Length: 513
Image 1: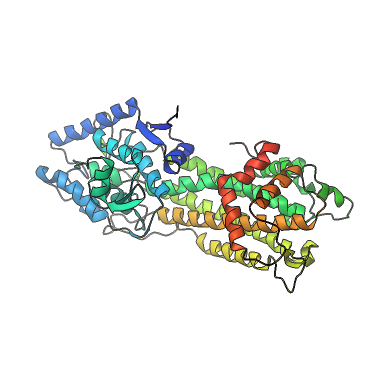
Image 2 (image 1 turned 60 degrees about the horizontal axis):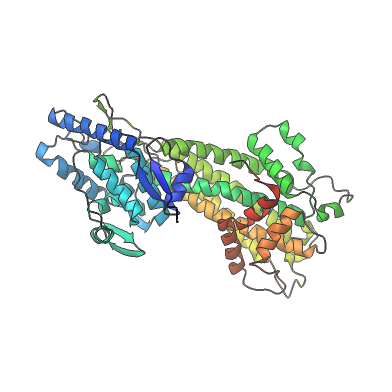
């Protein structure tokens, strides 16, 4: 019997792994009974406020700088539809499907906390769209990160009301047609629901959550690639001695040094140069625990902030069980914006130091290996341009790593006079991640070639396993060939976790979860 996996959302306990399971692997979603109750109680507060004739922002007033404009009771539903249509002004390439599914899940989870005032059937529609794989087409550009990610979320909601565009079963349709084919009835927005659906940080947080998950995986590949370069360059692992790192006890640094030593144990290559007289290596080898460890600490901090954000109520106004409906600023994306910039910087440094090792590998004066890792240099260029590509990628990252969160352009006639630019920061971090993944793939390509050139000496057993996995897809370079296919194959192995799995089968987990 096939077991159907389901992620139950309650607004309080969603994990980053849960987000990946739903966004990337298509797992089903359900609301807990507790969440249903909280949603209904929250809606009752809104209904009571309307009956009592109270003035509530976004319910019977305009939005942003129009907050002082009163809306007649017969127009409160039309107000919500107009909000969605008017705010759907995104441009550029659509977000990937996994990002849109992530933002849908996160928005449903935020509504499930019971502080938003949406009807239960509205939240259930969003859940059904996830479960039946109706994915709104959401342009990537157009959000300044306050009041939340208005434009991206408005494009998401367009499909909920039978407008906009969506993917369904791999084809692009109008929102109405996609919903019809999936057997989901579009909703008719009621008071407060439009603003409840689009006031939030879910697009930037979805991008960030997937990026930080991938960054934690990439750290393990970067550890193995750096260790393989050390082997190929016949470096010393003395600098990874635990005693060094315990007296500068940054957690990431200690963890990185221990992981490197796990990967480098029992190496013939290391034994072959035990008495060579070399005292210390270049910084890209010797200081790798310090550099990688600092990035690990940063990534873990980003993870902790996102774990809080994905279980937060981020819309405005917020609806409290005691009957109060309070306007605030939880939609402001500053917490996510700052850590997305931090993530981009941390990942950039992993790429920067890897490129320096690639450079050492291809330079015969630094490596002691044949020039450009080919035995027929001159006629053959070998891995020469692999370093060029790595240099291009890390240079691009230096531009992308400039923080977006230090910028702000006032919007809505100065009502929203400080914004976060968090979605821009998140998109940049995602681009940096993709570049660094390719830099590490290039390092694997060069380091594996360096290991081949040291034969018959063998690397450590864990690195021999990593080398075996790489060689199962990418043969040793004997004559020049287009290397872009090799890089793509190694990057695919990394994405599948194949190299890490082979190594950890011998070493155990390189890093604790």
